[in-house]
Structure formats: C-alpha cells, structure tokens
Image (cartoon, rainbow, N blue to C red; front, side):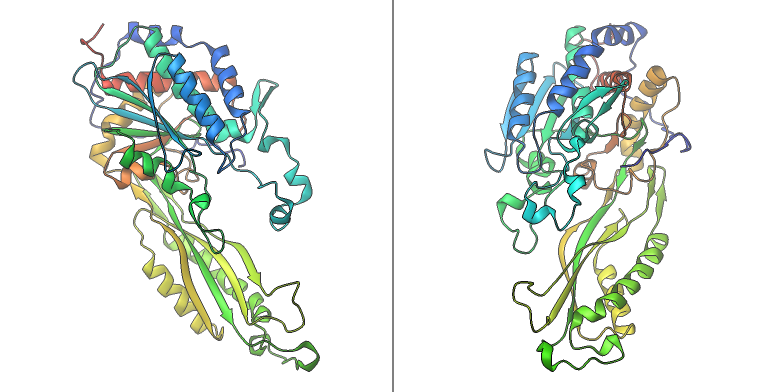
Amino acid sequence: MRSINSGDQPPVEASCPAPYVVSEQEHAAIEAAIDGRELTELALTLGNIPSRSGQELQAAEFVRDWLQTAGFSTRTVGINAQRPNIIGEYGGRGVGANLLFTAHLDTESPTFDPDLDRYKYRDSSVQRPEWTRCWLEDNRLHGFPISNDRGPMSCFMIAAKALRKAGIDLAGRLYLTACPGEIGPEPVEEHRGIDNLGKDIGAHYLFHHGGVAADYAIAAEGTDFGVTWQGCGYALLRIDLLGDGAFTPALEHPEDLLLHPNPIYRSGRLIEVLHGWGIAYERAHRYESAGGVSIPKVQIDAVRAGLPHQFGAGSEVFSLYLEVGLTARQTLAPVVRDLEALLRASGMGEFAVQPLVLRHGFEAEQKAVEPLVAALQDATQKVCKQPLRRAHPIYSSMWRDHNVFNMQRIPAVTCGMPRVLPTPEDLVKSARIYAITALAICGRAGGPA
C-alpha cells in the first residue's frame, strides 16, 4: 500500500467518557514497562515466520508459546488443527468491561506456485523480499508481514505484558487474539472447500467458538494512529458473456464486435461499460459518518475464457470477475439489479450475473462505541501529544475484522501504528496507546492506584 497521510482528517469526538480514569502514576508505570528493543525484536521475529494464508500454524504456535511464557492463560480454537485461532487472556479480577484485541496471522503474498502466479504477477514482483522477510533499515521496519499485520499484533502483546509487568491487574477481561485467514482466500470456482476458507475460520469463528465475551473490540491494524468504527464489505460477481463456438477456418467476422459469435470479442465493450459504471458507483455510494468516510471501490480482478490447450473453435463463454465494495449502508441485491440493467441497455447480448462471494460492511452504533473512542482519544493525546483523528478513508473503505464484531453488535474500531514503513518508536507509541486504552476500558482490579 502506498504511503497515506491521515493528518488532514478531523479529530473524533466522544461525549461519553471511558469507564476508568488512568492516573499519571499508571501512565508512568506503563511507559516504564514497555521495552522498545523487546518490541522491535518481537515484531521482527514474528514477522519472519512464514505465514501466508493457509499456512499460519507456525506463527500461531509462536504467539501461543510467547503468551504462555509471558504469564497469560491461553487456548486454541479452530476449524482445523492447521489454522488455529490463539486466545490469550488477562485480568477479570473484578467488575469491569471486557476488551478484545484482534490481529491476523496471515500475510498477503503470491502463492509461489509458478503455474498460478504467472497469471497475476510479473516475475520480478514474485521475487520481492518484502513478501516474506522483515528487517530494520534506516530506523524503518520493512516487510509486509510487519505492516500487515504482525506489527500491530506485537504491539498489543507487549502492551498486555507491560500491564502485567507494572503490577496492574485488570477488573475486566482483556482478550488477546491472533486469527488466521483475514486476508483470504475465498472459495471460488474450482478453488472450493475448507482449504480455501479465509475470513470464516478467523475472527468470525473465534467470536462464536472462542469462549470470548467482549464488550468492546479493537482490530489492531495500521491506521497512522487514526481510528474508524466503520468498514466496507465486498462482493465478487461473475459476469458471463455467452455466445457460440465457431470453427476458426469457417469463421466470418462481423464488422460490429457486439455481433461476433465469440463472446471474447464483446469483452472490450463490457470492460468499457463497467469502467464508467464503477466511477459513478463509487461517487454515488460514498458514505460519511462520525466514524469515517467509506468509498466502495470497484475493480475487475480476473477474466477467463476458453481453454488454451484446446484451441481451434473460440469459446462460448467469457467470464469477468468484478469486485464491488459495499458500505455499511448497502446490500448486494440492488447492485446486481443495477448491473443487469446496465448490461441490457448496453446491447451486450446474452449474459448472466452471478454473485460468488458476499460480505456486507458494518459500523458501530455511535453512542455504544463512544467509551472506547474516548479511551483511545485520551491515550493518543497522552502518547502522541495530538488529538485522535478519524482514519484516512482508505482504512474505512476496506474489510478489517472490526466488521466481525460490529456485525454482532459489539462496538469495535480499527486503529494502530503507521501502515507503511513504521519506525520502532511508532511501535512503542502504539503499544502504550493499547495498554492505556485497555486499562481505561477494563479498569483496575481493586480500584485506582
């Protein structure tokens, strides 16, 4: 992802305070308990464990072992043993609200199967070290695994350790969760079955089967220290253009491409029409609230037609796979109807529109999320010496796992360190913000120090 500047976003407001007021002594104790070198080493170690989607086990086991060594109780739940969710727990020593942190173990990358990657990546892109390696250079942390998402995960792990190290027990429960599959994949076409499950086996599965009872949740991901409590969902639609096979030696080419029997020849017009539709769609469905700005983006992700090893008669089917963002205020059915009307009006010939994947977007109820926002607001002001701002629209226009909890009426936000090339100091700031927020939400067992 390109560098993002969230500094021009407006400060957030929360009229309802956090449940617990963190004292200056507690601030100082938390700051003293966070070891910046330990945090950087944790992020690098965890980030350098191979953990592309479908292969999260080794990273999950590392998180579990680290939490146990740090003195936290842990448990493991998953749809199968190879892709578990890890849950650590701290506190619960009194009467207080429960806060859940979540981050994902999987990292985006090529498949490293040349027969698949050649259809999506240049050879030079597959070789980029950032896919699988993390390193510190010129005081910047490089590598996609740290930026998305094991850097923020390391921050809340160290934040919880700092609370324990400082002797601050919590009245409410603090859940520390590391989940598989947030990035993907999705079961689509022949890539079906449990091996291709993504989001369904991560935070969504954890919510229902992980033994957690959260009052609030934070999806720890990079937001440049901004915050948002809304997110987009998405749909993947397959648009089929249908035609007739034509034996190549017998083919007569019409002047008008839309009249060609081979539907591949109509694909150029389809792409042109969808491009214009997508621009108008994004403008029409832009959604702004106190929690952020969501712009539901549209992009063609893939196309398919024919069998290259069985050529000679063209193809009867051309398939285009269209990704359509959905804000928290949208559902899919009107979008499908709109596309069908567009294709009919464009003279596209015989076609079919089939939804293959659907995940709606969600947002937290404003009043319900305010105590969590207030806690983050106070912590950000204390640590960063600046007000907590609304996250850049990019962060509220994508899926993140705060959607899972807002879907279930648990007020949830996403917030964290800079997404692009963070510094070790950025990680320390994020860990401090997470620790202070956890104390402000859960409260201190036995009351103020």
